[in-house]
Length: 455
Image (tube, rainbow, N blue to C red; front, side, top):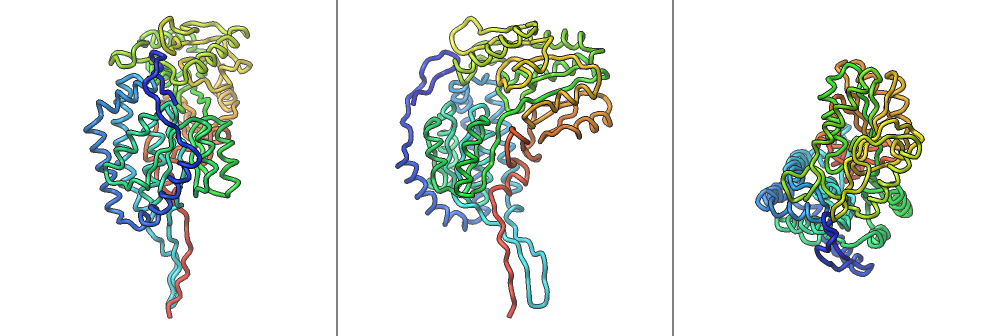
C-alpha cells in the first residue's frame, strides 16, 4: 500500500497490508491476552494511559509532522489535535473506573442483587483519517481501560499516525497483543469485519457503515457507527454579525472543511443577510492556502485526493447550473497537490447537492430565510442528524429551536466543537451508538446480573 502526501501528490512510503491469515493470528493472540488483561489492576491501566500522554508530549513535534505529511492537516492544527487529545486521555483515565464499579441494587437478609460490568472481549476498530488521534482514541482508550483487547485498523490515509499511536501505547505499558494494528484499505477492513469479534466500531461513510452494521448483525455483536453529517447553522437577526460570521467561517473551513461536525450549510435571517455575507466572505478571504508544514497556512490539501476534488467540482457545478453564484473560490487551486480554493456559494436552495449531500471540503452555501420557522424547517430537511448550531442573543429562542432539531449535539453561539465530557452521537444517517462521556466508556462494557443467595 502506498501512502501519498496530499500536498504534493508524491508517495511518502510503501507498507505491507494485512491478510486474512495475519488478521486471524492477531485476533487469536488478542483473545488470549484479553483473558489476562481483563483481570489486571485498574491502577496499572490508568498509569499506562498517563504514561501514553507523557510520551505524546515528549514526541509531539515529530508526531505532528507525521500527521501533517500524510493527511495534509495544517501543522498548527496537528499540534492542536495532539494537545486536545491529551485532555481526552485525562478524561478517560479519570472516569473509567465508575463504568466498571459493581452496583448493589437490592439487599435482603439472605439475598443480594448486583449488576457487574464486564468487558465485551476483543473489539474491532475501523477508524478515520481526519482526526486520527481523536477518532481512534475514542474507541481504543475506553476499550482498553475497561478490559478489552483491540484490533485497530487506522484509515489507509492515516496509517503512519495509527502505527505511532500503537507504538506509544505499547511503550506506555499496554501489552503487545492487547492492541494490534491492522494495516490496509477497504478490502482489509472487510476482512476484519468478518472475524469472530465481540464488537465492531467504525467511523466513516454511510454506505460503509451499513456494511459494517450488516457484518455485526450476522454475529449479533454490539456495533458503534460514527458516520456523516450535513451540519446546519442559523444566524438570527439579533446576532453580532461580524462575530457570528467569523465563528461560522471557522466552523466551515477548519481542517479544510474535513470535519465530521464542520458547518456545511448556513441559514441567515433575511434582515441581516447582505451584511452577513459580506462579513463571511471577508473572513474566508483571510484564509491562507498553502504548504501545510508552514505554520502560517490555515487551509491545506484534501486527504482523499483526486476523488474528493472531483466531488467538490461536481457539487459546485451542480449549484451553478441551478442558479447559485460563486462569491469566492469555486475551483481547484493552481498548484501541485490536491488543493481546492475556499468556496462560498449564495443563491442556493435545497434542490442543490451542496445543500443536501455531505461536502467534506472547503465549500459552503449561504441561504437567506424569512423567519425562525423557515430556518428550522430547512435545518431539519436532511437525512443526517449529527450537530446543529443557532446563533442568537436570546437564550429562550435558542433553546426552542435547538430542542426541535433532531441531532445528537446542539450548539448555541458556537459550532464545530467536541467535549470529552459530553456524549458524541448521531441520529439517522449520522450513526448509531455513542462515544465520549461516561456513556462512551460504558459502550465497551456489558452488564451481568448476579443473584447472591446467602446460606
